[in-house]
Each structure stands twice: as C-alpha cells, then as structure tokens.
Image (spheres, rainbow, N blue to C red):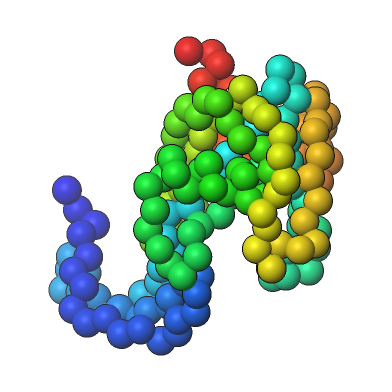
Length: 180
C-alpha cells in the first residue's frame, strides 16, 4: 500500500470556537520521524442554491485574504459541533441567505486542504426555494447575497471574481450531476 504514516504523539497547540491546531509526531514507513501541523475543523456544508438558470451566491469579507469574495453559502456548526450534514446544509442556507429548500440533493464530498487540514465538506444542490429572512451570525453581518445567471457565474470564475476553491469545485460537481 505504501505511504502509511503512524502517529506517535499529538498535542493541541491552539483552540477556538471554529478550529483546533495540533502538532503530531509521526513515524514514516521507512522508520524516520517527523512532525505534522494539522488544522482540525468539523465537516462543513456547502449549498448550491439553484432556481432555473440562476444561482444564489453570498459575498463577504474574508479576513485572511483581506478581500471580499463571492462564493456559495457554506459553513460549519458553532462550537465545533458535529451536526448531521443535511441538517447543517439547511441551517447554513437559511442562516446566510434566508432561503429554504424544498429539495436538497447531495452532489459530493470535498477535502478542503488535505495537506494541512482534516476538514471535509458535503456539497448539496438546493432547489424548490422559498425566500425568508436570513439568520446570520454576528461574524456574517457584512454579508451580501445576490442571484446570478449560470453564464455570469462562469464569467466571474474566469475573471477571478470567484476564487473560492470549494465553490468552484461545487460548481464542477453540479455540472457532473447534470450530465448524469
């Protein structure tokens, strides 16, 4: 099989309400030792809200980049909770956009940054949408939302206006789903 790495020790070096960071001492297959720094975050849900040929995106300031970014609604449960993925998807959709979905279909699974993080995400297609009031968390107070046609979303990706890797991967999963 190859490439198996054994964790010998692990210590938490940082924790907040959204993630933990740990440092693991490891033994590689050849017997040599090393370390891994790992960001642990709970599974997130990403939702592709679609109404006909329109997709609903959210825009918010992403502090690590120092930029506002358009992306699909996505997130984790507060306090590192591990919710049922479908329940989490419905919650994130309602919280960020105010939309409620009559239908949610799972499109796939994404690994965020497998070289540094254990986080994985479930992607859902939300249709049969009804509008309501959003229920944003305090950290999301600057969030804006808008509907875009598919051609405009693809142009935004091409123009580097949508650069969120998870959103671009989710759009690809949507295209694969439609081809089935």
